Amino acid sequence: MADTTTSVPPSRSRDLDKLLLRPGNLVGPRFEPGTELRDDLQTFAKVLVVGAGGLGCELLKDLALSGFKNLEVIDMDRIEVTNLNRQFLFRLEDVGKPKAEVAAKRVMERISGVHIVPHFCRIEDKDIDFYNDFSIIALGLDSVEARSYINTVACSFLEYDSDDTPREETIKPMVDGGTEGFKGHARVILPGITPCFECTIWLFPPQVKFPLCTLAETPRTAAHCIEYAHLIKWDEVHHGEPFDPDNPEHMKWVYNEAVKRAELFGIPGVTYSFTQGVVKNIIPAIASTNAIISAACALETLKIATECSKTLSNYLTYNGSEGLHTKVAEFERDKECLVCGPGIRIELDPSITLQKFMDLLEEHPKLRLSKASITHRGKNLYMQAPPVLEEMTRSNLSLSLFNLMGKLPNDVVHVNGITSKNDQKTTCLRKLRVVFKGVDGVTDMDTAGGA
Amino acid sequence: MIKLFKVKEKQRELAENASGGAPVKKQSAGELRLHKDISELNLPKSCTISFPNGKDDLMNFEVVIRPDDGFYLGGTFLFSFQVSPIYPHEAPKVKSKTKVYHPNIDLEGNVCLNILREDWKPVLNINTVIYGLYHLFTEPNYEDPLNHDAAAVLRENPKMFESNVRRAMAGGYVGQTFFPRCM
Image (tube, rainbow over all chains, first blue to last red; front, side, top):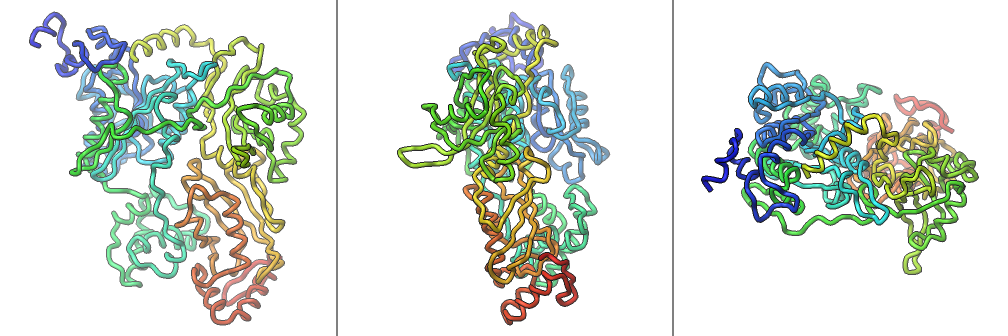
């Protein structure tokens, strides 16, 4: 082992060299060890870290130390005092500054040669093109909404060939990390190949919601008192002014009201930090869990980029002192996933009207879909119900579908309606890849994203 | 995949100004599911739905309920619906826009309906929620009170509750609270 790296200049990281300069048994089919790979990783791999909080700080540091030189980070939050125990890139004097900017600066100060571009904004504020620029997207997020959003964006780059195989160059890999107290998960998402976030969204437990009348009438716990102040009392006093969980004055107000409520009913346990926890749905974050999950995510990112080893198949869950499981049972793709699935490909004559198209759906052997309602890029082309929408969209029926779809040679539409399965009528929602014959000549490349 | 990144980087340099069919942000799965719910709505005559932002914004809409039975017969009640992008993982947010004297609806428009909070399931849909709201008017119940006073009156003196409801709907005071006319 001593001699393998003597002929090449060693990099800062001996451990990275061991992975990238030597052959191995578990490597991917295109893996070619050597300095070129190491250099290419620095030159061509561009990773976006979404979130600069507990996981994001770790991820930036880990990726920068794993040979990635082009990083960007996006986060809409500013640093709060309570972040400092685990978001180790931040100092007391940084409180109030944007997380993304401080995190980028601190990592660049400590790790020479790394370039990190911060983006202090919401993920929705960026154009979709912004996300297409990255080789891999690493997620250090804390909400289902944000994950679902990034997943939809990443899957919208995906294109399928006419035989429904995903086109490799359109796959935008994601590595998703998440932690809750002592537990966490790391997951690899290769849209079109492994299940996307939407395929398995049912895995997330529903949020606990207390009945409003319990809050109003019979509070029994500190959380009930806090939710009363947050959901009922706030509206009563601040007519129309929306509650902003990031405004400390709003939070203080809710806390004070919750304390009053708790005293009235003799309930112990309302504190300011618990109030924040209940209102913002926060589960205490543990620095070491973030470090473990981030390490797993950074390693997966490196494996996807270099193929120096097989990636996770396709997730791991870490359960604190109880251990970890991975390779137990893979998540499976939802074949009919509206976000990452290929949908059903239909070739059409550009002269077809919307009405004719709907007739065709009824006859289509794979669909047999009647009473169709059709939507394209957020525009409702036809709605069967309610009457008010049916009336507003009826005039589209005699128009050309090609024109209604903005004269694109191919694009995705979603239809729902009634179909028969084993003589049983069921409602269904389907994704269709519409390809117009003889337009633009690129009939074998359809966007699949679509959801 | 690094070779792929390399190729793509080169392609990008070449095709910097070539492509016209750039990808666009697609509809979320939640919007699509809502589209399905809306296109399958099957409402009773007493309920009508409208879309203040036009036919392409289904995430925000309004429902008018005109109960054809019970204490609230003759009244017109407006509800606003706000649906999240992760619908149906999360229930729609529903508020009453009409000030109503009702045991399960408070004066701020909060509605105590189990399927909007603790009993929401992704298999439920917009139709079930609207039926649930309709049901609140035909069968108000004093066991889940949001308006404490109204619930107490309904429990102890249904006749008086009925006359309070009539007075509120006609536009007038019940106790210290004024209710605008909604008939």
